[in-house]
Length: 501
Image (cartoon, rainbow, N blue to C red; front, side):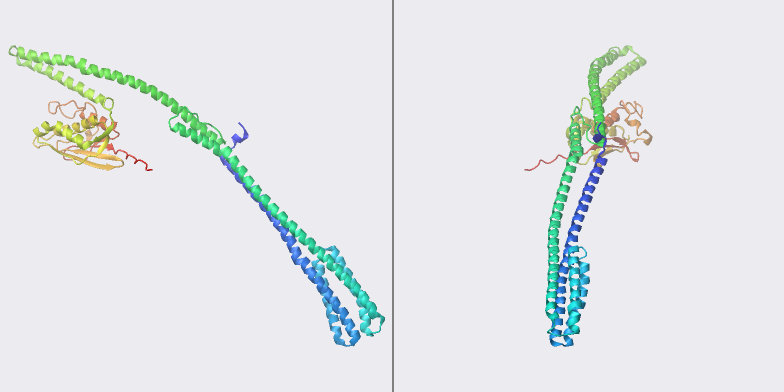
């Protein structure tokens, strides 16, 4: 197994998040560095070089004020002309100090500033101060002072040129920094997009594609293609999930094969049961019919020659054969529930109840019985079995009536939790609560055969019919006036409406 297969999807996701975080951090750092460089170059240009250029102009003006003031004082010999000279000297010193700060990173400009300051200092010492001390317009210092000051102007011009060169270099550096910034941001965006694409591609190949294959395989198996294998691919947890689903599929296939084998065995068993039912209904009943028939013939032909005890013995034999026939017929009916009768269709219980009442009409009239039923619903089931259910319940209610009171049978209907709830209430002799489970067991009787005839299989057949239809049946122990048998049947699922175009 490769290293990729050993990784889980959670670890792959964590690595993906880590890679995205690293890309963002690197991109942010590169963007910050680019912006910082651009800001630094821009601040140097705006806060130092440009103010320095302005200061150089002001420095030149301050020096010119000094020279002009000295010439004016020499010509006019008035002290008021010396005020601009003194102010110029002060301004020169202030601007020079400021220029040293602004041009701290420009050594060539600083050297030019120092040259101008030395020349200005020498001019004041050699020309300005002597002329102020002896203001003679005809002094040769006047001419040489102008020549010397022209040298200072040349120095200021050179300083201005160096500052302009520094400003041009700063603008060029700013343009270069901006281009670098734009390039870096373009690289960052492209890198992020490429990283996201690579991450998405890796997630698609390592997680989403194996997950889609697993989902498709599981859907095929869920749709009934149990032979389709479920792949164990992708990260470790997805591969483990696929292996677990594959193991479950194999167990389902094994169980399905066993179920089909069991179904085949049941089919053969049902065939044997049907053969047995045929034998029971024909071959076994034929001797019973002969016994009863010949016993009755013996009684009719030789009745005068038989005493009372012989006739009693013959009656016992006929009754036993008749009861054995009834028992066999009831057993056949019980075995056919869910095997022979299994035609599932829509059954209108109201129509079924009407047929049952018609079948029992003579018995209901002989006992003056009344049956009250509400409008009964339509359910899914076998019509014959559901008719048998109602017939057994109504017949039991009539059979176990009170001697001095005509039977009154009431059918009630309710609905809860997806089931119809039916109740058959009578006013008969009732059933003790301790026999609530016993009455639904085959051949279980609560009364002697000579009092209430029958084989004791009727409610057992009702229980089997109800459970075959997905419901349950029970005795309501709270009923004090007669017996109350309750049972449920599923409410049919609604039929979906056809989609409209």
